[in-house]
Amino acid sequence: MLNLCSEPAFAAWCARVRSLVGRDRFAHVLRVTELAAELAEAAGFSEADLERVRLAALLHDAARELNAEQLMELAPPACQLEREHPLTLHGRAARALAESWGVEDEVVLGAIEGHVMGVHPDDHVGTVVYIADVSEPGRNVNSAIRELAFRDLPAAYRAAVRSKITYLEATGKPVHPATMRAYEAIRGAAD
Image (cartoon, rainbow, N blue to C red):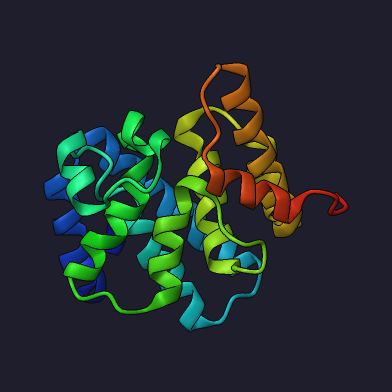
């Protein structure tokens, strides 16, 4: 996937993200981008949507290593949970960065923002980025979700959202209202 950074269409994006995150985070970004592209290809996405997936995945964690003050400046908190847990803002902050860099495609911007809290299940670009982020091989978790995604993206997305809810509840962390909305949107869907 390092070849992505040598492609003229992506080289500048890679440089911007690389300048904002550490080596390990950038390696994660590249793994997410590679997995997201593989999932999109396996699902038969159009070339345009494949390019959207690649760009959204590449930019998804651009704000992940900013400090709380920087996150809140880029993405002012909308609720108490965001004020208490500024890291929850990194998807919205990454979207703001992407917009400031000239990204205008709402599908890409929505996927960048939605990789933290979830997206509507009909957003196939956003669901692929979300799945890839929670199940990329370097995380050493959610391999079953990754495997399922190659066969059934909607079922994998439902499993990924459920996994996030279960993790947050098990660790005593609050569940963001947007994540609950994503969960409500998938509840009751067949697996």
